[in-house]
Length: 158
Image (cartoon, rainbow, N blue to C red; front, side):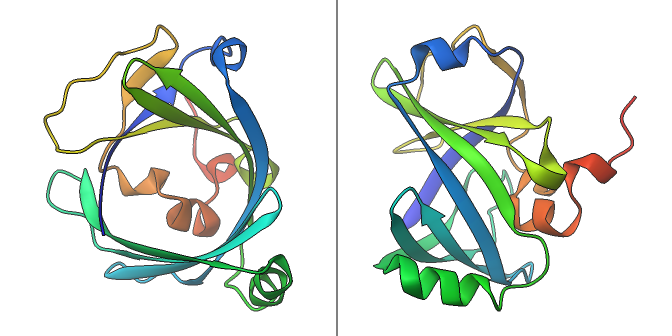
């Protein structure tokens, strides 16, 4: 139940040409406490309830527990979530032995595109596609739970 991942900004839309699949995601948070988050998600035609713990010092690893729920249940839970529902399209992009999940955000987070790669251990090597930009692993402002509270459009862009 340990999630190990690295997170990056995306520097071009070329990733879309490499996508094996994509689907819409709507998600909200029942709890965004720094020690734990409780997320409700509708991913395509599936619902999920996820609990995530606090990240380690490097930001690459944290506890994660997830279970499937019905879309009807997910919709009911989304209705009572904290303010700030996240809307995005997720693209799955195979790259060597890994799959990058690239999230293109909409709504209050439009303009933000983030890629994640899940690993078996923190120092595991992986291919770096040309569209992969700056690493933002461990920068909490890029966590979906924080984007729901302080959306990308409210950041001061230079």
